[in-house]
Length: 570
Image (cartoon, rainbow, N blue to C red; front, side, top):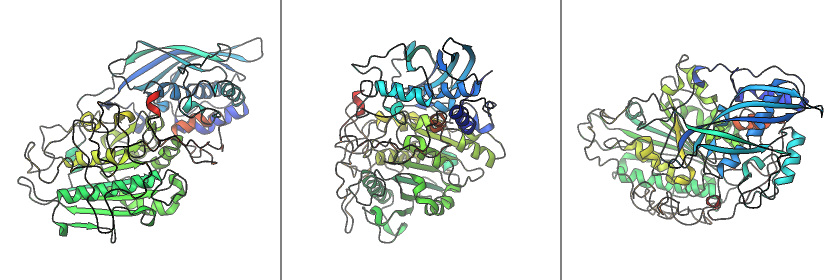
């Protein structure tokens, strides 16, 4: 039997493990139109399949409980793989060949076969095998004991002392001084093969994006601190930087200010006092265009946890999403919570093609079929990939760099006379976060087709320069070959950069010394959940796994990462 561990299985898995009693097998093994296997493209990663024969000690004979425990056990691959610039797609975990045998201790020795797709961040060095090291007992008590043994010696950056609610993220078994005992740890050798789902040279559907003559951008920037209001908060600084860059870019593509509309009173530092802004422009004609195109960018500063904005967020987001060409979120992934919250938000417009980008830490691991299923349902059961491309990260994303990544996406979609494939777009985004796209396998656009009627490919487009000078965060070049991010010119009452950014500009990336989104130090990564709060969001792909081990309503310790390139050491 082939079982796909899915977010829809949270409730039965949680009940099974919490009580350690028999429970019905998880539903949803048969893929729905929105739950088909997704293809993959990246400039900095390749999709591989890990297949391994694992083992587990369980107090339960119930297959559903054992499967939940296996999923919880393999959650620790997230931390281990992050140490190798990679991460698995946990929602796509397949567990087969489950065999349970009673032992003399009164528990059960469980053997199984698992397959996990992994975004491998070293495309030129794909190993033939990889040894996965995970806890042997994945009950709540078993994980507490295992984490307590290794949470000071087998961790990366400042994860020392993490509890079972977050140790899976900080776990680094390759760290010097980490000595794992075979008594409480399973070492399983996975065979590694390149996935047939890798695509080559796929483009966004430029013709669909511009079919109505408009590029509609819906962007969200999350605070770094819960309840923050000062511009010194790195998330608010990113919001200010992005708004400044958008304003500059729009003015560079449309010098006639009478053709630009903005939220009244808007400056380059709207901050918490102006958490919702809009910038729009009618663009100059290009080639033999019959009518002028438009760009509209709506931006909201959202909470550390998206749900904190409640009805205010919905009132802003719902009217914008049915016609959105690209949705951009930059901020904390919340260990999956914010990703899942956003997948459940908004209104799906039938027939609308949307690029959906979640720019936070390890978001590739947290994306589940929730949004794809909604898109499929809104389109009569058609494959979601016809209408949705999902862009996520295989590695952490840093505050200070997210504005550059967002601008790269916008500028690329504006480049109708020189369209870019997804890998070409991603080559200009901070390589450390390893941006990937899924759902693009059935995209049909290529450079033989015009993106806009009357605008042939290769004609100089005065309306879509790649960028216009220094980034508001510090001015480093894009990682993709020298183009700089959009300038943030001085504004009446506001300068180019966010005031009091307190180191929120980005540091140099590791690809050829270039970086995206500015120079300076990283302000920390968008990874953790709020201090003193539960993980929440029970439907999240990763939280589905975590909740399956009764990781419920528990606080997430605060990880205030020191400024600097903390992740590159691992």
